[in-house]
Length: 177
Ligand code: IMP
Ligand code: MG
Image 1 (cartoon, helix red, strand yellow):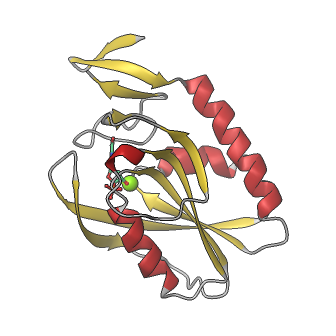
Image 2 (cartoon, protein in one colour; image 1 turned 60 degrees about the vertical axis):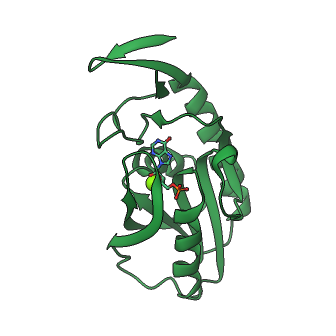
């Protein structure tokens, strides 16, 4: 389905219902895997905000949330791999079970940086839950423990993901055509 939004043609890739179902499945899996653990959802701003808000409501294990802000230098559609921390955690995660919640793993450069940064804080465990993975664009290998959807090499927007800071509020994920 194609829609006209802000003078752009957007093709729906993952509908609201498709996202809802998969996020519920991921939440159910995480509820089992993190039962009895000391889960810290590490939400990477800004893109993961909608995903994390929906996901946490499907996790029955007790959890706390921390936020990390990252910005990577580069043009608007590709990261340079040089990552800057714009907002850091408010509590230490030492000996806790950290789950990084990310919107998309594209080249993998941002995730590689994050894993290294967080591993240095000595968590009891460190895993990754990403809503989207674009394997065709991978430049570095990073372990992804939970993946919502594997998508082809399109620049996608909506459900938290932006194009020049816009479109984050779309309830579905689409590509600009
Ligand atoms: P990576 O370092 O190349 O894996 O990508 C890091 C960041 O780039 C992601 O966390 C997103 O914020 C952004 N990004 C990558 N691909 C897309 C896309 O298709 N749409 C919107 N943002 C993207
Ligand atoms: Mg991101």
